[in-house]
Length: 201
Image 1 (cartoon, one colour):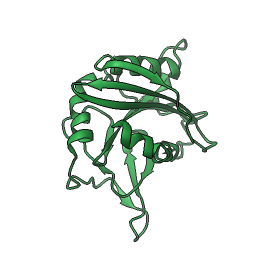
Image 2 (cartoon, helix red, strand yellow):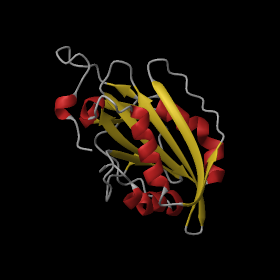
Image 3 (tube, rainbow, N blue to C red):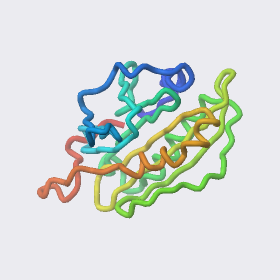
Image 4 (cartoon, one colour):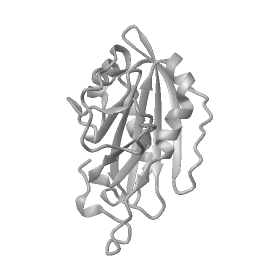
């Protein structure tokens, strides 16, 4: 499977622990209001959009992720998939498990944590898992989600990384970002599927 991000961990951790500048702001985002209260990012390949607080920026340098946004303390990586690219026996939760397990192999002292999410959207199903881990001399929280839309071909695996102290104070913000995931209306000729433009796995 090509969509495994162990090779990207040093990049993500650099954003989390070393800070990042806000100079690399993508032209693919737009402001929702003059007050700069939140941003909208779009992942054009999948017709996905989502909202973040204003301090989040896109940073796609040296990453194979379908999309990566970050603030100075946390990073969100997104991979998109199409159900039609898998066999009938496969399930998005299988992909969720493979992605999580492959990613966690790069960390030490991995422990699954109890965490109650605050997702509220009714137009999607979101599965979440939280892990504590260590990388070199740092402790880190790794927050995975699987976002599925009924009757749609597209689904998404996400990973948020942050220090434990920051994550514990901002889980509601993380959940709000994932909860804001929306898909562009499907082409009426495709019955909600987008498989002809599916990405390789």
